[in-house]
Amino acid sequence: MNTLYELQVELTVRAPFISGGGGDAARSLNKLFIRRSDGQIALNGSHIKGKLREALKELKRHEALPEDFEIIACFGPEASDDSQTDALNTAKTVDYRLKGRLHFSDFAVSSPSDQPGCSARQRRLTKVRIDSNTGTSKENCLQMIENIFDPGTPIILLGTISFFAGEEEAASTGGTLSTGLKWITSLGGSKGSGFGRLEQVRTTLWKSASIDARILSGDHSGFSIHFEFLDDLLIGGIKKATYFVESENLIPGSAIKGSLARFLNRLCGTAQDWTAINLDNKLVSNTFPHFAKYFSQIRFSHAFPVAFDRTHRPVAIPFSAVTVKGDASIFDVALHNSPSLDRQSRIPSFQINWKSSGKARRDFGWTLPEIINKTRTAIHEKSKRAKDEKLYTFQYLTPFQPKETGSERCRKKIKWIADIRLPEIGAEEQKRLAKEFFEAINLGWRYLGKRDAEFTFSVHEPQLNAFNEQFEKVLPAHDGGKAIVVLQTDALMFDGKLLSDEQGFFPDLFDVYKKFWCEVTEGSCEMTRFFARQKFAGGYQAKNNFKLYEYYYPFVLTEMGSVFVLEIHDREKANIKLLEFSQRGLPLPSNITNPISSDPDFDYWKKCPFVPENGYGEIRINMAWHWTQILPV
Image (cartoon, rainbow, N blue to C red):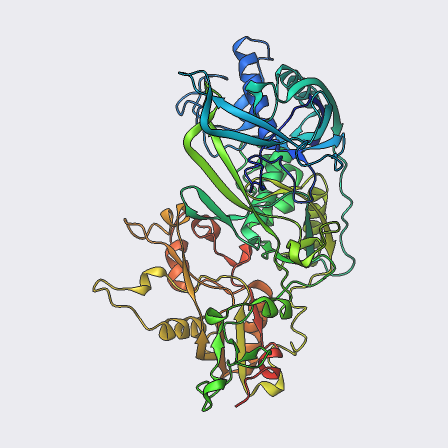
């Protein structure tokens, strides 16, 4: 089994030094130094990674590196790598699913500190571009650069390079990386003008300290994990354009589960990060047999962002929530028999028409993180300059609340809370599974998201139904024989092809949802009203969508916040079914599961990612809010 190692790196750079972060420029300045979300001046880890990769490629060409050192295995493939063969290693096909095993932190400036006493004029440098024909300054090419450190000042940057390896391999890798770092001549921007000269490199290799999260006493069926991120986070990847990717605010359970699966593969030395965690994965199953056996059955809920002092996950704002003119309260119309009121001033306004939802978010426990954009560019292989038309921007979430709600000097932090529920197996088997779960995550599980944001975590008592203070045997006596179900996460409730037939006619969604609830509750409940929205989820996921049709069609998800009012016909059976759904999530309907189960390679999660075990279909039932906040007539 491998161990997580950290190569502590100290770089000494001589000023002038600048590394633009792609953020907004200030008045009179065209290029500002990168600042982390906590305000600290830093150099992006991706910049160090790119410079180190180039240095190692050059050393490799001159046969100055160990023969067994594989650059692509450590750094991952890049666009300049040959798609057929890897010339830097041995002749073999490059798999672009491969993610480099090295993780680079940002390199923060530890010395000297900022110089706030300098005047605005002293804190900027001026550059011009020279016309190659006239030899004079080129018109409209004056650039003002932030000058934080006086020229000639030595600047110390501290950061880490982390990786999983055995003891001998770790020593060899650490030595090779140190050699590559010493081969770098300069860092940051404007290197051709003498900026950022690298003068000294110091490295120390350490075994990463393990975490001491322990099994909670008593019930081993579930627990809650609180994630505290140390880096900016990119989740999901909603592509708004070819050059802009927007992040989601919550972390899907599938992302948490995928992060843990990749960690297990690296910890146990599996060759490919994406190898499934099951009994066929011998390197993992030999070390963690119960974890491998039940991994696909463990339910990971979505992680929701909350203020750092909160202990409960927030609740999705129901689509049945409304506001009325002249009243600051938020009301509910799920049980309202006459939403069209007589008085014009009391006409309800639904979420889609709200100008602001800040109060609703606060009432339901949401604290959204600050959003920042980071713009990068691809670098030309030979000239080492920015490629034309290759700018791209990613939206990141910081681990802090927005600046307007937090002090600049003492920013209020945010954490993400997720619930883990183990499968319903024997008590002893469940206890062994929980033991292996904690043994594994304590050995170095710390990276999540599109750009491997580093996190720390703590384990708490499960809070899956903590908001349901009225959850009295699922159906309390005062409900009048009704169950109001609110989706807390997106759910796959019908096959997208049901949206239209060959003639292009669309079905009544009321009938579609009514059929779903009748099926999953085995006739014990009948849907009488719903408030729902739908969205498409496609891309590479839909290409493997059950293999039912030759052409492409996406999944259709019912969005979180959707509300369904159910009439109870069989209270005993409804209690059993709804309690099961509240603990395990909504099941997939038969028009989706039947085609999948007929496949010889049967596994729901392999064909469809929107399964309850990945956090989809989480619900809340009969929240007291539906009765206490009913819209008055």
